[in-house]
Image 1 (cartoon, rainbow, N blue to C red):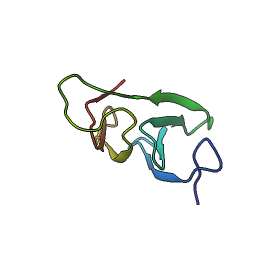
Image 2: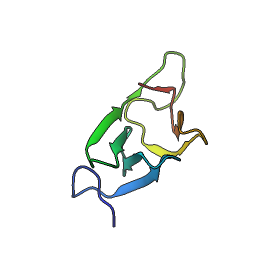
Image 3: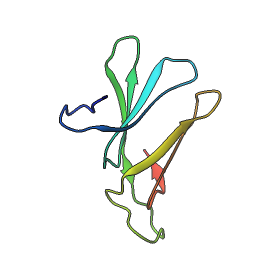
Image 4: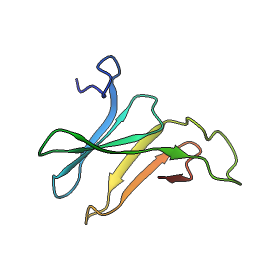
Length: 87
């Protein structure tokens, strides 16, 4: 079983970019996406969930449910309850 940065937390999802250079991971219940450099194994960036004004429903801390890279690998779509944007 894959684990998140915290070894006691299971991953909800892990996916490679089309180039294979990045790995996106989401820990179970986490509102954030971690991007890893597959060559070095180092964390490259953390995409943090930010609430958006005017969006109704649960926002802050809403977990990521799914994600997908675009075919070019330049975009990462993220979906979950109350998602507005990732920074």
